[in-house]
Image 1 (cartoon, helix red, strand yellow):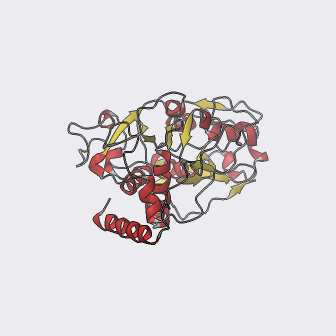
Image 2 (image 1 turned 180 degrees about the vertical axis):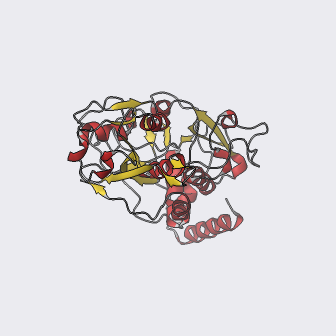
Image 3 (image 1 turned 60 degrees about the horizontal axis):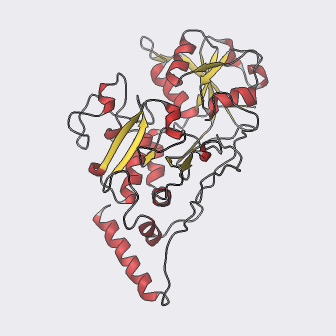
Length: 351
């Protein structure tokens, strides 16, 4: 945390203490504002076999700007950390833009000497780079919690589902575009959302599916998505195609399936669709994209509400939520969104 922020927090705390009635205290609620419970409706990625009962609903978001004292109180004292004095974060390996940036082969100033697990992974971005939407957001949250970049450690998660599987976690929190769902919230604790995104349909430009304008027109095509995601759930529950959808291990495999004509189109979140179209499907000779974003999905599909994952009932969530609220209130979160995610492009809705 910067010196100016520390002085501001101290000044506000002293003024409040002087004006408070005897015995009064200022402390955050012990109940996080946006942790879905098992009884809540599902919000959004989930099981390999989606069920119609799991209907997405928006997660709660902070409506009031937190006071500096509230932020200080939530993160004051001895935080329940995996490694005392350090913040242990996690994301998937490999990591991809626009969520993660930098070059895994580069040795960054705040990266452990000798490199990170991502350093040995082909085509991976590097969490220590502080570049890309989730990496930049993670470091902004860490700063609001009182940690410098040099006090942040990263551990790699090789299997997407492991992050929200039941059991103890080796990380303080994990960020990897994981949508908040009631099913997952039975095994882990979610923070308030730090990102919302619609699902979208991506196809190769020559395919006739690119002319579709409605969900009904998609039913006869071969569709696919990554397993255990809301993208796959949307195919099964919203599109309900006549052809059995293809299940891929991850988005990279889904894109390979699209390029290999295994499917006519894949469902991915809109931000990933932009990256796939503009970077991964670019014709290097013409410099034109070989892919087309056919459209995005509005109602009855709900947007994905993405949150950080903590161990179930981890009290650290109070501090993380306060930090997320702070970076939203001071405009830092929006600036990160504008730099790494917002495309300024209009994509039609498939209804």
